[in-house]
Length: 350
Image (cartoon, rainbow, N blue to C red; front, top):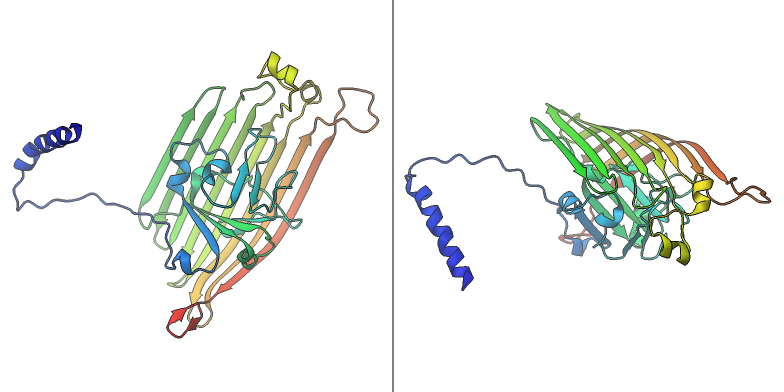
């Protein structure tokens, strides 16, 4: 009985507003932008297992600090969030990548057409800021070979692009318990054939446990220039700095029963932590040619520095304060090219 009463009240409240308007008065409606995640091809006819996650679904009611929130409902994808910012999330697609001790292996990671997979097969998500992502495409199974060295699958992220005209600005501030704070800002603009997007963010937390504080900083710049009706030139610049990611370690049953928020004594004494900085520059071009089909070319360079004190004691150590240390200084340059063309048999594309 409640539904008819509510409906009647709604109609009664709207009646005076309608009475004040004549049938001939023009009504100017506000501009409405609709973003869809569908392509021109049906997922049922692609010949591959593909899932698409929209940006709205990623950020809906979530802090979105990890991929487990974004990919929770994608079939075949398992993301183990250990809630430890010093340890990478364990990501697997149909079992591939489940045995990786750190980083992501067996899966190709692409952000705006730029590979995030290093020559040794390890993929890093340091440059990724989920708040700027507009679309995630997940390709599972053998069809992932189309994107290169990826036995398990491909996860392609597309960040927000500049508006078709005018300017757009957004900002977000989040505050929560245990010192969690996130500040994110984004600006986008269009000047004729040139469009640009700038995004910056900062995340920090003291953590629920002792010795579990973390801090992350992100900045990215994207430029797109329509050189012609069929060709677009792109520039991508990304920088990430994670100066602190303390590792509280594991607890015994006795330690957990005594104080749940405590940290392992060895991790505290040996200063288990992680400091990583990464910068990336990419220049690309994409277009469509009647004879060749859709094509894309990208050249990129990446610099990655990692300082990672571990809680594991070194061999034959007599001091309980001594730990092991991992230091990585990598410089990577690469190029990526792709060509796609629809083939037809009879009147149907294959």
